[in-house]
Length: 165
Image 1 (cartoon, rainbow, N blue to C red):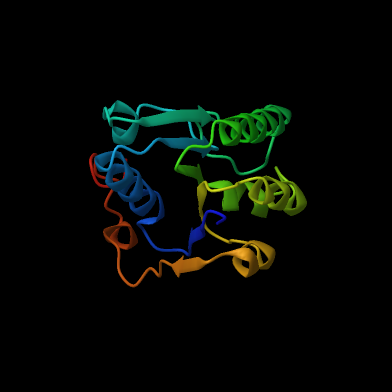
Image 2 (image 1 turned 90 degrees about the horizontal axis):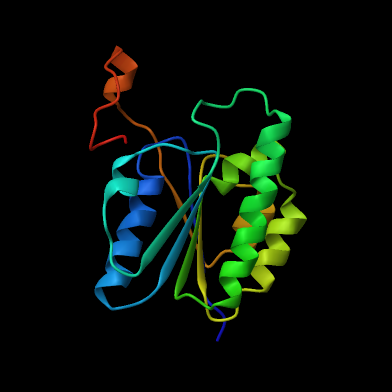
């Protein structure tokens, strides 16, 4: 049986949080999880947490990306290579956090992510981030769209430690 493909997308809050919830749940059952964060680098709460059987790697710059730079392409390439190597170890779950954003801004090609998905074996793959491409949605077993209905950002409130990061 091939692992399931789970897509968490949309403009609402909770995509990464949901993926980390699945990682904690899998950890509670003694299962190995590898989380690869695209476009992110920093000491977020999830990085500081010590979750048994969960390996987290970041491949990004500390600042938000508006226009991709050469370094972003290089980091994304390294993240894809790391993902392929992680699959060889057959973890229970591989989370590709913000991969959909990397796809939508052209840092990685859909065909390369589809090739990675094809190599999953029994590993379940979770792909997070806004703007999931239709090809990724099509191959998924579960797709959840987070919809922003109301957020305190809309009134100018800044991100809260422990909720957003």
